Image 1 (cartoon, rainbow, N blue to C red):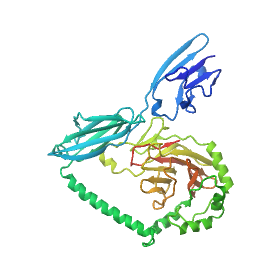
Image 2 (cartoon, one colour):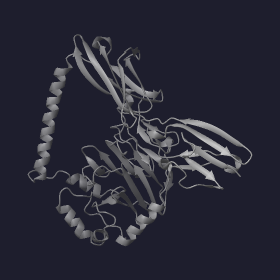
Image 3 (spheres, rainbow, N blue to C red):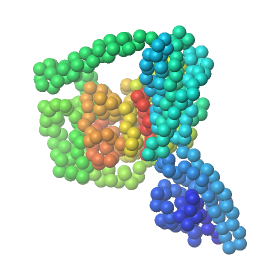
Image 4 (cartoon, rainbow, N blue to C red):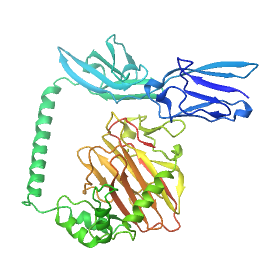
Length: 454
């Protein structure tokens, strides 16, 4: 019989305490409660500790102390929490016959390196590299150098923690770019003004609604969409009205703008409000623990080693390959589903970092227009179903965690805003018999923040 104690900094404030043949509840440091567990076979001497939902504050030295009545042993391990930052951003300023090029990247841990290179891959020397640490402990890096455009067609700025954890961007520092930039900005601004004017006129009924053909196409797809109001799941009366009076609800949805579903002809699944709430509450307690299958990832994605922490949009090997990257490069789960009612969650936004794009859903094989059923998000576009990008789905602020219910009995795929406890959208699936579905996630391509199975 022995006692086991894992602690960090303070022996009397343990991270985990095993005593009297069981793990003690609330033994010490409150910040580790619910995040630590023993994963080894204690009777064979394996006292390994698992620490989940890592934060920067978790970094440091952890001590394992084991003792019995006649002996004791002690060992330590150092944990380094690594965080990948943003893609480098450039700013340019003319300086005589040269161009002052600045590069900046934020959100790293530990301290990253920054390297300038020319078109031939030669490193460009600079002594102007600056670091700054924010209140969360994340490091920002910036640098600048003077460059003659005649020396190279373009230059790159690379920031990273190692050769395998590196992000880079490139720029063409051309003289006279301010004049060209002014013209480009002017043209772009005029285009934006025209588009906004057209949208306002359309909303006021002064222009014909132009998404009819797109909606008609979506209505004949194998996956129809059920109009979804952002109703709290605890509001039984409204859900009952929605489920039991589908036709009248659809008529009201078609008469209002913006509408909240893809097809007004969609049928409502034959399940009462009470049964729906019971299913939701039941499945939350039986949440599937999904892992990423690295073999299915698009080449532009970076997947953490064990497949459980996150999926990032990473760096490509050449500019040519970047041209072929889709807006939502995917990766699938290792687990597949073919029957029953399955529920899992996906984190699409961190507490302090808001992603600019993501896509979450299911597919049968590598996703295509025929097999993919998903909700996607893009900044300035909002959340929309994969079957109809022209239809925006209302959501209360930034969605942080999505809950997905794949129901083979009623042939539906439902999306839940977990933090707001509200229903976002439901797809009617018509091709579920004898097919295996895999969960799909994509971090998009507009930022380097991750999405992950929760």
